[in-house]
Length: 117
Image (cartoon, rainbow, N blue to C red; front, side, top):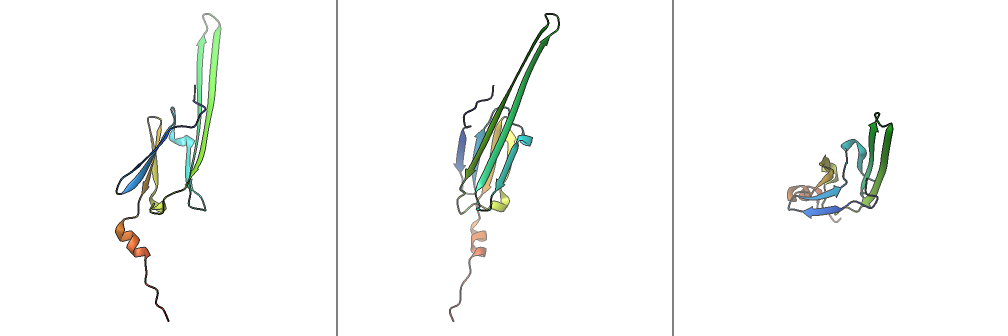
């Protein structure tokens, strides 16, 4: 049965990136939708469907169970996240979202001197 409560979300930080792990048993990559909205927030949407079917024709017994889970959450990203380089993958029911940080050289490229007239 799929858990109807919100999945566990862990966030780690390293020198180069933040990593979010979202635990959602039975998750498949085709059931994930990750985007950055117009305000620069990370939107994570996950939908999981599960169906169990047992049939025993010898005893004329049929059992079918299905469940559905849905998770949708928006996260405010830190200013140092390079939104163009965000990536994600699913492995063993865990959605891993990699949020790379701007490197020092990239930050310097965004700065400029403003001349005063």
